[in-house]
Amino acid sequence: MATLSQSQLSLLLFLSFFFTTAFNFAESQSFIGVNYGQIADNLPPPAATASLLKSTAIGKVRLYGADGAIIKALANTGIGIVIGASNGDIPSLASDPNAATQWVNSNVLAYYPASNITLITVGNEVLTLMDQGLISQLLPAMRNVQNAVNSVSLGGKVKVSTVHSMAVLTQSAPPSSGLFNPVFQDALKGLLQFQKDNGSPFAINPYPFFAYQSDSRPETLAFCLFQPNAGRVDSGNGIKYLNMFDAQVDAVRSALNSMGFKDVEIMVAETGWPYRGDSNEVGPSVENARAYNGNLIAHLRSLVGTPLMPGKSVDTYIFALYDEDLKAGPASERAFGLFKPDLTMTYDVGLSKTSQTPSTPSTTPSTNPSTPLPKPTANGWCVPKNGISDAQLQANLDYACGHGIDCGPIQPGGACFDPNTVSSHASYAMNLYYQTMGKNPWNCDFSQTAVLTSTNPSHNPCIYPGGST
Image 1 (tube, rainbow, N blue to C red):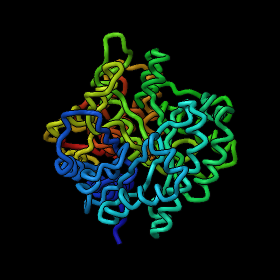
Image 2 (spheres, rainbow, N blue to C red):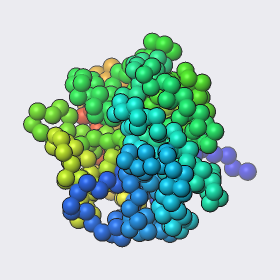
Image 3 (cartoon, rainbow, N blue to C red):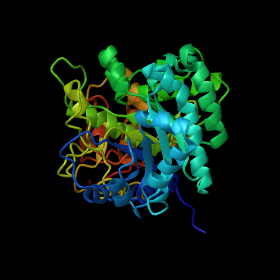
């Protein structure tokens, strides 16, 4: 039996990964969701939105209410649907089990299972409103809704939760020190016990955008946008964090663990970045919004997870599907939409099923060291720009290898270990990150230290995946 050379084996492993990834990317991804707000007067019809969603990798949609037209339009799409009972509904749901039964019958049973309703959120950021009357009614309302769900034999299929802002934490840095505000701990104990008993997620709204607004240093922006940076070491456990999203989510994980609820899962109910803002707002821009949401999606697709929850992506709902032009507040509040009312993209973050599948790599292993490597027909490889410092290249290398790609070939004994330089190793890792994450322009940015090239950087026995785009 013929044996494969190390370079041939490396390519076969890559091709196996490539075709698996391509197949998966062509399908909707359950961990990528979007918020569908309706504080607007120019939104497209629900049926048009349903068609739009089916053309993307978005696997779940979160509604802030329970709009029957939208729920019905999403029937038979397979898209998971989160519906919401408003803060104003809480008093009646808490005081009257019949009101909860009627709510479930009208908003769930009338559409299920054709419409794939998976979660009911009772209230939105209730605790941080500091309305003690409403806070005291939140858990009874959730219990009554859960009982109503159980009564129609949907227990375990349709879960019940509520959504919190990051302000429920009194401490979030470093992530290992994450703690809930003592003011909310009594209420949270009851809520979390309910969620543990019923298997529902703890839903939270982390926004690195707001973190950057309070600390607008360039290194903080790179940290918030998932771009190469020196990272931040958690003094409590020595873990280096390379992005704010993971740090915020792990702070919530630490807070839950400290209260004894290690088995309650986390759901990111909202996160996003505005593409426009007022002149005095720090951070809004198309470039930053594209970088945050595009890199967030790539991070989720890598399945690397967070340092405290590795190997699995947290269900994450990006804010938002459309702009909401009737919202009050600064201009940024009306500029989070991924899509315009005419259904075109505000900017491309690789969600379209027709644009996200990586193209087939064009390089093939050579069995004869003297055989020249094939030439690509278009720019196809991501490499460092000339003159980039070793420190920056090391940061790029750490970033790429920390986001789910296989850096084994640049380890000792690997096909791409030699030459054993930071520049060579970073070049391989940066290109593999670009190829793996969807071959989008922002995947070959690395804080403006990388460039796309048509010159194949492969060298025997080291094969760089890539080729025509």
